[in-house]
Amino acid sequence: MDVLDWLLDSDPSIRWQVMRDLIDAPAADVAAERARVATEGAGARLLALQAPDGRWGGAAWNRGWDSTMHALWLLRELGLDPASREARRAVALVRQHVTWQGCGPPECDGHRFFDGEVEPCINGQVAAAGACFGEDVGPLVNRLLGEQLPDGGWNCEAVNGSTRSSFNTTICVLEALAEHERAFGRRAEVTDAQRRGQEYLLERRLLRRRSTGEIIERDRKGGASWARFAFPAWWHYDVLRGLEYLRRAGAPPDPRAAEAIDLVMSKREAGGRWLLDTRYPGRMPVDLDDDEGRPSRWMTLRALRVLRWFDAAAFAAALAPSRAPG
Image 1 (cartoon, rainbow, N blue to C red):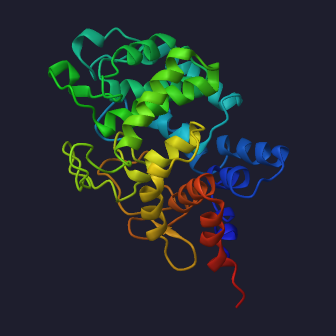
Image 2 (cartoon, one colour):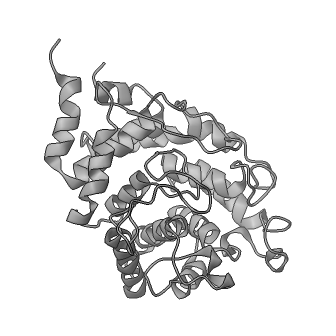
């Protein structure tokens, strides 16, 4: 099957993004397909898991990937339309009822969900979801701006004296800043923080140590390989996620990302598909269509649109095998 046909033969959450990002379908057709995320497939199943008290997984946050924060993160990635009745209802329940009681630092117990807690990696994910769904997360964004380190990134360990940023924390915060600008417009201090954060990634070619130029084989915190791509990634950084952020943020293609693009290209399988390299342990709130080590529509969609953003010729080359006759 042609890779584009294979991608379109899937969940509405994938189909509408393929239509928008890969084949330039008419806006009305894209919007109609996106509307189905709320009522069919993974999006509808995830919405149905929300409890009457607004929570998923019984908590604002947990280590199992099925909490309120993780469900909202995933709904954002699936592309649930913020203007839909279903999204407005779900987010209103979170806003009205969900707090950080019992799942964050004690001083945050009284915080409402969209006020966040203390760690910038968690607050970045909360702010990204909140901004996407139209919530006022300006105070949380301002807090994140004040926590940017001199090297341009962020680190949850800064409160313990760390002066070097973490790729994991930085990507979570950068995604939040980009989402906030998309939802509420550009703000000079947010734009500047994003520029400095992008430089943090690009100075390191998205995968190398700035000090030595060595490829970073393993993440110090979790031991994950940044060359192994996951979806969902949750708080973990990987090279494809870094490229996706740059694309989404409207950053121009930069030669310093070429090595990362080459890595993405190198992982393309016969027929123009990409595999899901890894899944992080935890309780997925809903099953997606991907098994570890198998061709993945999510990974293929994400890889192809990064290639299209960076290099039209590379994008065409990635599609060519799937379109060859015979």
